[in-house]
Image (cartoon, rainbow, N blue to C red; front, side, top):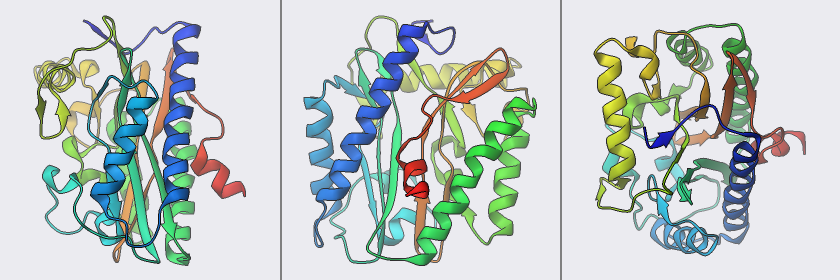
Length: 276
Protein backbone atom coordinates (compact mmCIF):
# COMPACT_ATOMS: atom_id res chain seq x y z
CA UNK A 1 0.00 0.00 0.00
CA UNK A 2 1.03 3.60 -0.44
CA UNK A 3 0.46 4.26 3.29
CA UNK A 4 3.24 2.70 5.36
CA UNK A 5 2.43 1.77 8.98
CA UNK A 6 5.30 -0.52 10.06
CA UNK A 7 8.92 -1.53 9.41
CA UNK A 8 10.14 2.03 9.72
CA UNK A 9 13.84 2.86 9.60
CA UNK A 10 15.60 4.58 12.49
CA UNK A 11 15.67 7.75 10.43
CA UNK A 12 11.91 7.57 9.82
CA UNK A 13 11.19 7.00 13.52
CA UNK A 14 13.45 9.92 14.39
CA UNK A 15 11.44 12.07 11.97
CA UNK A 16 8.17 10.98 13.60
CA UNK A 17 9.63 11.90 17.00
CA UNK A 18 10.75 15.33 15.79
CA UNK A 19 7.32 16.02 14.31
CA UNK A 20 5.45 14.81 17.38
CA UNK A 21 7.53 17.12 19.58
CA UNK A 22 6.89 19.98 17.15
CA UNK A 23 3.14 19.35 17.22
CA UNK A 24 3.07 19.28 21.01
CA UNK A 25 5.14 22.48 21.12
CA UNK A 26 2.61 24.30 18.93
CA UNK A 27 -0.25 23.15 21.16
CA UNK A 28 1.65 24.06 24.33
CA UNK A 29 2.43 27.55 23.04
CA UNK A 30 -1.21 27.98 21.98
CA UNK A 31 -2.34 26.95 25.46
CA UNK A 32 -0.08 29.52 27.11
CA UNK A 33 -1.40 32.25 24.80
CA UNK A 34 -5.10 31.61 25.48
CA UNK A 35 -7.09 34.40 27.07
CA UNK A 36 -10.49 34.33 28.70
CA UNK A 37 -13.24 34.98 26.16
CA UNK A 38 -11.45 33.61 23.10
CA UNK A 39 -13.62 31.21 21.09
CA UNK A 40 -12.90 27.78 19.62
CA UNK A 41 -13.06 29.01 16.03
CA UNK A 42 -10.34 31.60 16.60
CA UNK A 43 -8.09 29.04 18.26
CA UNK A 44 -8.46 26.41 15.54
CA UNK A 45 -7.74 28.99 12.83
CA UNK A 46 -4.54 29.96 14.63
CA UNK A 47 -3.55 26.32 15.08
CA UNK A 48 -4.10 25.75 11.37
CA UNK A 49 -1.91 28.74 10.55
CA UNK A 50 0.89 27.60 12.86
CA UNK A 51 0.92 24.03 11.57
CA UNK A 52 1.02 25.24 7.99
CA UNK A 53 3.87 27.61 8.87
CA UNK A 54 5.71 24.64 10.40
CA UNK A 55 5.44 22.73 7.12
CA UNK A 56 2.20 20.78 7.30
CA UNK A 57 0.90 20.28 3.78
CA UNK A 58 -2.32 18.56 4.78
CA UNK A 59 -4.29 17.28 7.78
CA UNK A 60 -5.75 13.85 8.48
CA UNK A 61 -8.38 15.77 10.44
CA UNK A 62 -8.63 19.50 10.93
CA UNK A 63 -7.46 21.02 14.24
CA UNK A 64 -9.89 20.69 17.13
CA UNK A 65 -10.41 22.94 20.18
CA UNK A 66 -12.90 21.88 22.84
CA UNK A 67 -13.70 24.19 25.76
CA UNK A 68 -15.64 23.54 28.96
CA UNK A 69 -18.21 20.76 28.93
CA UNK A 70 -17.57 20.17 25.22
CA UNK A 71 -14.24 18.61 26.25
CA UNK A 72 -16.30 15.82 27.86
CA UNK A 73 -18.24 15.13 24.61
CA UNK A 74 -21.63 15.37 26.33
CA UNK A 75 -24.83 13.68 25.22
CA UNK A 76 -25.42 12.17 21.80
CA UNK A 77 -22.09 13.34 20.40
CA UNK A 78 -21.52 13.11 16.66
CA UNK A 79 -18.50 13.74 14.45
CA UNK A 80 -19.85 17.14 13.40
CA UNK A 81 -19.77 18.28 17.02
CA UNK A 82 -15.96 18.27 16.90
CA UNK A 83 -16.04 21.24 14.54
CA UNK A 84 -15.23 24.50 16.39
CA UNK A 85 -18.05 26.63 17.72
CA UNK A 86 -18.36 30.20 18.96
CA UNK A 87 -18.04 28.72 22.47
CA UNK A 88 -15.94 31.12 24.57
CA UNK A 89 -13.26 30.13 27.06
CA UNK A 90 -14.03 30.67 30.76
CA UNK A 91 -12.01 30.27 33.94
CA UNK A 92 -12.03 26.69 35.20
CA UNK A 93 -12.78 25.24 31.75
CA UNK A 94 -11.33 21.98 30.54
CA UNK A 95 -9.45 22.52 27.28
CA UNK A 96 -8.46 19.98 24.64
CA UNK A 97 -6.35 20.93 21.63
CA UNK A 98 -6.01 18.20 19.01
CA UNK A 99 -4.49 18.18 15.54
CA UNK A 100 -3.39 15.61 12.96
CA UNK A 101 -1.08 17.37 10.50
CA UNK A 102 0.69 15.56 7.66
CA UNK A 103 4.28 16.67 7.00
CA UNK A 104 5.77 15.35 3.74
CA UNK A 105 3.61 12.24 4.14
CA UNK A 106 4.25 11.72 7.87
CA UNK A 107 0.92 11.63 9.73
CA UNK A 108 1.20 12.78 13.35
CA UNK A 109 -1.77 13.18 15.70
CA UNK A 110 -1.39 14.76 19.15
CA UNK A 111 -3.70 15.97 21.90
CA UNK A 112 -2.85 18.50 24.59
CA UNK A 113 -5.23 18.73 27.54
CA UNK A 114 -5.27 21.13 30.48
CA UNK A 115 -7.51 23.26 32.65
CA UNK A 116 -7.78 27.02 32.14
CA UNK A 117 -7.43 27.86 35.82
CA UNK A 118 -7.59 25.63 38.87
CA UNK A 119 -9.83 22.57 38.92
CA UNK A 120 -8.85 19.71 41.28
CA UNK A 121 -11.29 17.33 39.58
CA UNK A 122 -9.58 17.92 36.24
CA UNK A 123 -6.16 17.40 37.83
CA UNK A 124 -7.29 14.06 39.26
CA UNK A 125 -8.73 13.01 35.91
CA UNK A 126 -5.39 13.71 34.24
CA UNK A 127 -3.57 11.65 36.88
CA UNK A 128 -5.97 8.77 36.28
CA UNK A 129 -5.55 9.11 32.52
CA UNK A 130 -1.78 9.05 32.83
CA UNK A 131 -1.91 5.84 34.85
CA UNK A 132 -3.36 4.27 31.70
CA UNK A 133 -0.14 5.05 29.84
CA UNK A 134 1.81 2.42 31.77
CA UNK A 135 -1.12 0.01 31.95
CA UNK A 136 -1.59 0.06 28.18
CA UNK A 137 2.14 -0.41 27.57
CA UNK A 138 2.32 -3.36 29.98
CA UNK A 139 -0.75 -4.99 28.44
CA UNK A 140 0.67 -4.77 24.92
CA UNK A 141 3.96 -6.26 26.09
CA UNK A 142 2.05 -9.07 27.82
CA UNK A 143 0.46 -9.93 24.48
CA UNK A 144 -3.13 -9.10 25.43
CA UNK A 145 -5.48 -8.51 22.51
CA UNK A 146 -6.27 -4.97 21.44
CA UNK A 147 -9.92 -5.67 22.26
CA UNK A 148 -9.09 -6.80 25.80
CA UNK A 149 -6.84 -3.79 26.40
CA UNK A 150 -9.57 -1.39 25.26
CA UNK A 151 -12.11 -3.23 27.43
CA UNK A 152 -9.86 -2.99 30.48
CA UNK A 153 -9.40 0.77 29.95
CA UNK A 154 -13.19 1.11 29.73
CA UNK A 155 -13.75 -0.88 32.93
CA UNK A 156 -11.07 0.96 34.91
CA UNK A 157 -12.58 4.29 33.86
CA UNK A 158 -16.05 3.11 34.86
CA UNK A 159 -14.77 1.98 38.26
CA UNK A 160 -13.46 5.52 38.86
CA UNK A 161 -16.74 7.11 37.78
CA UNK A 162 -15.60 8.26 34.34
CA UNK A 163 -17.11 7.79 30.91
CA UNK A 164 -14.65 6.54 28.27
CA UNK A 165 -15.62 9.21 25.80
CA UNK A 166 -13.00 8.10 23.27
CA UNK A 167 -15.79 5.66 22.40
CA UNK A 168 -17.65 8.69 21.01
CA UNK A 169 -14.76 9.35 18.62
CA UNK A 170 -15.16 8.11 15.03
CA UNK A 171 -14.65 4.34 15.15
CA UNK A 172 -15.01 4.30 18.96
CA UNK A 173 -11.24 4.21 19.11
CA UNK A 174 -8.80 3.94 21.96
CA UNK A 175 -6.22 4.20 19.20
CA UNK A 176 -5.63 4.13 15.46
CA UNK A 177 -2.81 3.75 12.98
CA UNK A 178 -0.13 6.36 12.37
CA UNK A 179 1.89 6.14 9.21
CA UNK A 180 3.61 7.69 6.24
CA UNK A 181 2.35 8.23 2.74
CA UNK A 182 5.07 6.80 0.48
CA UNK A 183 4.58 9.54 -2.10
CA UNK A 184 4.31 12.45 0.30
CA UNK A 185 0.56 12.32 0.76
CA UNK A 186 -2.33 13.23 -1.46
CA UNK A 187 -4.30 16.45 -1.26
CA UNK A 188 -7.95 16.15 -2.11
CA UNK A 189 -11.42 16.88 -0.86
CA UNK A 190 -12.42 16.45 2.76
CA UNK A 191 -15.21 14.36 4.24
CA UNK A 192 -16.54 15.53 7.63
CA UNK A 193 -13.20 17.26 8.21
CA UNK A 194 -11.08 14.21 7.30
CA UNK A 195 -8.60 13.94 4.44
CA UNK A 196 -10.34 11.79 1.82
CA UNK A 197 -7.30 9.74 0.77
CA UNK A 198 -6.32 8.79 4.31
CA UNK A 199 -9.93 8.15 5.28
CA UNK A 200 -10.32 5.85 2.25
CA UNK A 201 -7.28 3.87 3.39
CA UNK A 202 -8.81 3.42 6.86
CA UNK A 203 -12.13 2.32 5.36
CA UNK A 204 -10.44 -0.21 3.04
CA UNK A 205 -8.42 -1.72 5.88
CA UNK A 206 -11.55 -1.88 8.01
CA UNK A 207 -13.37 -3.81 5.28
CA UNK A 208 -10.48 -6.29 5.07
CA UNK A 209 -10.70 -6.83 8.82
CA UNK A 210 -14.44 -7.42 8.64
CA UNK A 211 -13.77 -10.00 5.91
CA UNK A 212 -11.57 -11.94 8.33
CA UNK A 213 -8.15 -10.29 8.12
CA UNK A 214 -8.26 -8.87 11.64
CA UNK A 215 -4.57 -8.01 11.68
CA UNK A 216 -5.35 -5.48 8.94
CA UNK A 217 -7.69 -3.54 11.23
CA UNK A 218 -6.42 0.07 11.47
CA UNK A 219 -8.46 0.89 14.58
CA UNK A 220 -8.07 -0.17 18.21
CA UNK A 221 -11.35 -0.50 20.08
CA UNK A 222 -13.64 -2.95 21.89
CA UNK A 223 -15.08 -4.48 18.72
CA UNK A 224 -14.43 -8.07 17.67
CA UNK A 225 -12.26 -6.83 14.81
CA UNK A 226 -9.74 -5.82 17.52
CA UNK A 227 -9.74 -9.32 19.01
CA UNK A 228 -6.18 -10.10 17.96
CA UNK A 229 -2.67 -9.67 19.42
CA UNK A 230 -1.12 -6.21 19.13
CA UNK A 231 -0.07 -5.49 15.55
CA UNK A 232 3.43 -4.23 14.80
CA UNK A 233 3.86 -0.67 13.62
CA UNK A 234 2.86 2.78 14.82
CA UNK A 235 -0.32 3.43 16.80
CA UNK A 236 -1.80 6.70 18.01
CA UNK A 237 -3.22 6.02 21.46
CA UNK A 238 -5.81 8.50 22.78
CA UNK A 239 -7.67 7.63 26.00
CA UNK A 240 -10.30 10.30 26.69
CA UNK A 241 -12.34 10.52 29.90
CA UNK A 242 -15.33 12.67 30.79
CA UNK A 243 -17.36 13.33 33.93
CA UNK A 244 -19.68 16.12 35.13
CA UNK A 245 -18.74 18.54 32.36
CA UNK A 246 -14.99 17.90 32.73
CA UNK A 247 -13.01 16.24 29.95
CA UNK A 248 -9.37 15.31 29.43
CA UNK A 249 -7.27 13.19 27.10
CA UNK A 250 -3.79 12.65 25.75
CA UNK A 251 -2.59 11.25 22.43
CA UNK A 252 0.83 10.11 21.30
CA UNK A 253 2.60 7.48 19.19
CA UNK A 254 3.14 3.94 20.46
CA UNK A 255 5.77 1.89 18.61
CA UNK A 256 5.28 -1.90 18.43
CA UNK A 257 8.12 -3.99 17.01
CA UNK A 258 8.15 -7.80 17.14
CA UNK A 259 5.25 -7.70 19.57
CA UNK A 260 7.03 -5.42 22.05
CA UNK A 261 5.97 -1.84 22.64
CA UNK A 262 7.52 1.44 23.68
CA UNK A 263 6.36 5.02 23.61
CA UNK A 264 8.05 6.98 20.87
CA UNK A 265 8.69 9.84 23.31
CA UNK A 266 9.73 9.27 26.92
CA UNK A 267 8.45 12.53 28.38
CA UNK A 268 5.69 14.15 26.32
CA UNK A 269 3.93 17.20 27.82
CA UNK A 270 1.27 15.21 29.72
CA UNK A 271 4.02 13.22 31.47
CA UNK A 272 6.10 16.31 32.25
CA UNK A 273 3.03 18.03 33.72
CA UNK A 274 2.55 15.16 36.15
CA UNK A 275 6.19 15.30 37.24
CA UNK A 276 6.20 19.10 37.67
